Image (cartoon, rainbow over all chains, first blue to last red; front, side, top):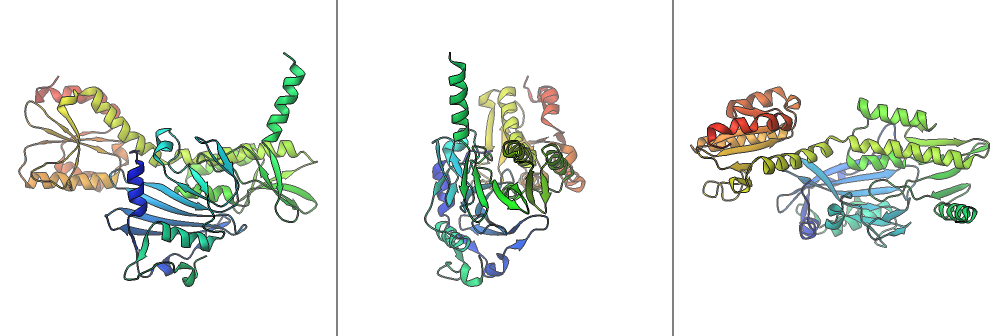
Length: 164
Length: 256
């Protein structure tokens, strides 16, 4: 895999990402048969031409067990990478390089140092107080990664459209 | 060395790594040091079921695996999962992994459960994309070992005809005759894109020799490969094949 450096990652995080006008219809989670979770995915193009996707996961048995994932497509290799994950408070997390552990709502983010150490790109995570529910995590995610709906000023709207 | 002291310290420190936290009525989160490969710990819950107790992941393991967008319905992955379930006495109840605790054997049940979760989560290492990523690295290493540095330009683009690099070439090789435009082909998408690029260069009447090294030529869609073969005569079906025959191929180009 091509190494994504921290400055490149920051540019990808901050790149304006355009959601289609009917995103609210396309982002409601559906139950996946044979599992205990619901899921949904949606692609969004960045204004620098990069392709991103939002992947939603929500556990039906535990409202604190969820994940909202920012995916990025490396066109050259036709591979998808998880650049960030907004997780709930259903499990502990340990940062291998820093030696820290916690059991709380947390955000995974891709880093250069973890890639260089041969670890998974999004292995580093930090505790967050930006949300304490799936819906709150979706709001924070949309705001933090600069998602906008084509033609609208603000996209802090997903909960209004029944997401979460 | 005091063996008994070592034993007691060892047991105390290992036991310290496992903890039980109340979270609900007759429901406990079990904290262990065992993790997925991204640092998230396995989700293990001890909860009452009927007259007894079970360990459960409450569906988290399969949800976590899905973060990699993996299809668990392939034969190979299903076999890995079924084998792990059977070997470690774990049940799959509609996506929830369960281990029943018999006769208060919490320790045995917990460690079997953890081994089951570990083996099941290892299906992510069968993901084809991991193999594809390794292929591009192998391709580059192969070229760097086969050719002198001054003859090779990776990620080349024609500065005159393609200043914005819309048609990049994986590897441009300077020879004594005409240059070689070498492409690494891991999949159908890249094969299609490369066909377009080669046609572009043909239309510009640029003198070059198109060459391709596939990750596995047999996996390319037949129609895609047929269209590609119209524009690229020289193809190595795999890196192994290239290692065996590339040097001989270069002789007419005044190299080797």
